[in-house]
Amino acid sequence: MKKAVFHWSGGKDSAMALHQVLKDKSYEVLMLLTSLSQEYDRVSMHGVRKELLYKQVELLDIPLDTLYLPSGVSMASYDLLMEEKLKSFQKKGIAYAIYGDIFLEDLRRYREVKLAQVGMQGVFPLWKKDTRALLEEFIELGFKAVVVCTNARLLDESFVGRVIDASFIRDLPLGVDPAGENGEFHSFVFDGPIFSEPIPIQIGEKILRSYASDSAEESSVNWDQKFWYCDLMLCECQHTLSAK
Image (cartoon, rainbow, N blue to C red; front, side, top):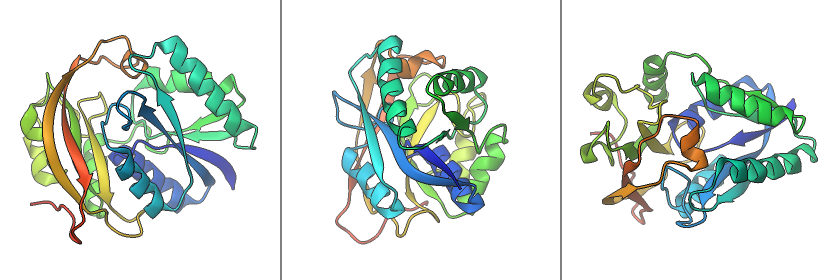
């Protein structure tokens, strides 16, 4: 099998892409890579606590590597940090990097150019799939995810903290991609066929945050500056959050 690193965000697209890769068995995923905010010590853009990421990784049983990004990191700085990380994988014989991107052409081209500079190739298992059909398949396969971040201009506070189910899809405003591929929302997957068991979580507070628009995460898409976040915590109880 071809050796690969998987760019893991902890959200639904990552979960679906990894599920397909593990099922197809064309690639051996030797490592997960997740970007974290240096300021908040949480998953970049998603705002998910590090301990929840670690719990996902534990249940996936795949090693994790992390890339810490300073607050407001410039695109040039981001490129240097990512290049150094990718070179470390390439030196270990890893020639492929897998992403959960679906249809953002500019982002794919950017990734492929940067990978080529270090002698690696990009793999996009979900590329050009219909996003509504993909989300419906996600639910049918038994995956469960909760919305942890929304673009406040497009989705208000009521959408964060919601489980992604059929009613969530129906309630999305016109113009919002069903999979949030344009950055409308981000999610945390807490159950599904790729995990050895569900992750017990509980919903915390919701908060509105504003950001400058020059960071690396915002440069590849038409991002706004205000986002709703819903804090998630590991729950000591034995049951998981579930769809209503």
